[in-house]
Image (tube, rainbow, N blue to C red; front, side):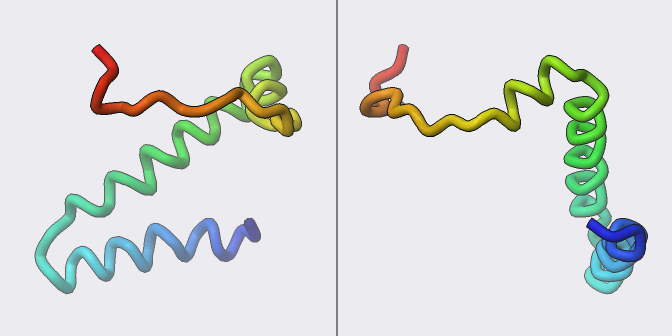
Length: 67
């Protein structure tokens, strides 16, 4: 992501939220950026998240049946 895009996204989000009178949507990008920064600051976590996951882990369980 270019620096301009990084700076423009929150401005666009705030403007859009203000235009409809609802600031709730402003929090989500900030939370996502915080989590991204946390992942990039932890070398072990970043390695796990960016490794090739080409292996098949089998069928997923039906989430309605998980207790």
